[in-house]
Length: 224
Ligand SMILES: O=C(O)c1ccccc1N[C@@H]1O[C@H](COP(=O)(O)O)[C@@H](O)[C@H]1O
Image 1 (cartoon, protein in one colour):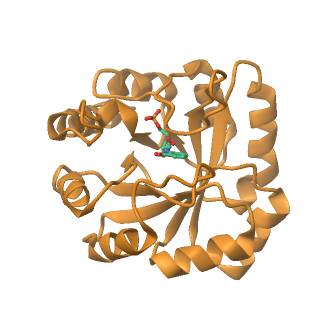
Image 2 (cartoon, rainbow, N blue to C red):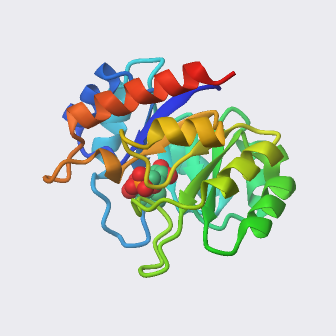
């Protein structure tokens, strides 16, 4: 899985078709968020996911930590990939692999001011049980771990890319203006954005998405 572009926070079917038409590979659906305020209902997400034309694909984004629950929810939604954004114990990641071996698992690495060593340790500990890692940025003001719109220290992401035997998707504050620099500096296998692609109405802005995809593809193409 190399050089993928993901966009997270799908709101409805129109947004999903626009993202596919603009060349986004994976569409992220954050569901069962701890806030209880999902942007889309589970039945609506299930229908949209069923209608996504391959090779585009829907990805569940979740804070669930129990392997059985993750597996059952993915089956219910009809997704073949899940982004686990919470503190999932290593034994649950291994169990998920056992009970749902064909599920593609992305594990988040949420970058804070001072946790680079901890994240490098996590990569060593669970790389065998996941298919890809995804960086994100912690917001110390709100405690937010996802869709914070904040950048983090890219030297940490670059170190994680070098350390990980599995591909790494880069996320956290990416937008059309910085995605090419991020790819050149960090050399990730994939990129992902949410808030940096929204317009003032909170929906994905088609021109921002188009520029993001174009810039990402150009920068991936320039990696030697
Ligand atoms: O997209 C969301 O709403 C979301 C909710 C909860 C956890 C993760 C979420 N998405 C992830 O947020 C980052 C990127 O966000 P941004 O570009 O900084 O706004 C990425 O990992 C999304 O997959």
